Image (cartoon, rainbow over all chains, first blue to last red; front, side, top):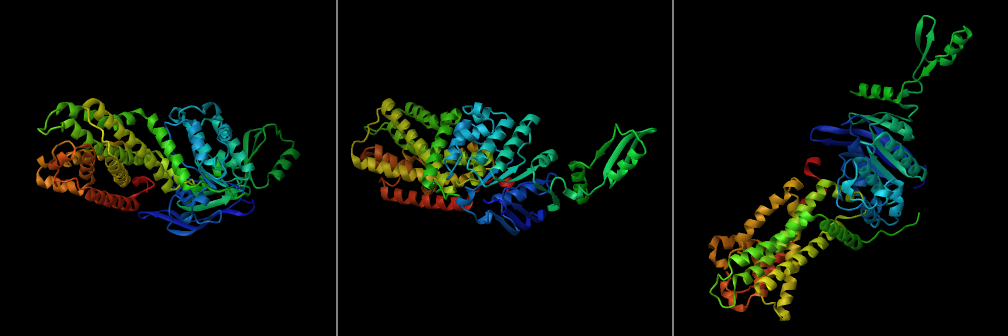
Length: 282
Length: 271
């Protein structure tokens, strides 16, 4: 996959279950080599969207291309070029970590070495452990190992760090950065905004089956243009001011000889922006 | 990027077979129940009905040893396949494979390798019980072993395919064993596997049993291991090998069609 080309493209994607339209016209364009995060509350249509892109689910309408191929009609060669880390799996309980990874590696045309992948996800000391004895976080890391053993050009990560402790999440982020640096296109769904902010080049917020905002972590939902909050300890107590031009405000304060030792300039967090976005969508 | 070639479906299927066997031997509960149960039944039946028939050289144990191979194949091929696929659907094995270059054909090939290995071992265990515990004579002429060969292969394929089809009816892996075993055990009685001679059964029962493969499988295995003097105890008064082959081939086709129309990669409640 050459970076710069479109790796994942969806136009007017729709999917209904019964009468309920889970995906109601989603457009996405993800460039090769990009880490793209899909955010949204439970039931927003994230997983349905991802499953259609993975070829796991049929769509009702719309155009989809992943690596130039329609996933609904894709064959083995295409599946060898994608990697999927789905939300929950409890398979291979009686095999060891090493056996599981080696087995799947043998099904791909140009796999990574099993030992290398196991090391990459931090399970080297668990190679000979039965899968059923792994903790939740270790099991998840095995899922990631199985997702990347085929050296995918596009990797789907569906809520990969659910249930991780903070340290395990940091380590997982490092792994995602390694894969991204190798040029892997990554589509990540997550509930954690700090995760999206730490990893994603771009992100989209889905609510009610449609994309309500799209941008970079810094610009999402007009975040960069939204006003900032300037606060400081004034002579008569704490002072807080909303402004679109903090430079001018702080200049005036400094010129007036205000004590600025407690000065704080804050922009709305990604979480504030996100909650505003999904609140509007409801 | 180099256009590395994908491993062939046959090779992937064999790899799947290896991993299926490894998983099976690791799961001791499954092993004991699906594997030793028919052999245990044979020991019990053979001992309880030791000299039931006033037919020279035809002890009950010998008849059961032959007929129970049919039960062994059904319980191993049909149940292992049905329960195994329901389990694979539930624990995410199938979902994972669907996102990889492993095709459905390779997956089923792996299951077939598993089932063929298990049924061969099952038949060997039943024969060992028959030969060593009940002095069942092992046939020496090649013709009988040829019959055993095609009968065994057709039985495994027919039961395996029907097991795949039946897995679609099972709602959860937890209940799969119970749901699939009930009709199997009923059919064994209906088909005269546990009751000999089969002519003791009411006519309508034999008619119903004749629709299903088990009656024919058991009859075929009796033709391999019993002397031709036992022919009179069969429903048709003959071994009917041609008809057995025809019925089993029909069930292979029916099984294949049912598989193709009913197989689901995922759980119904998720779909």
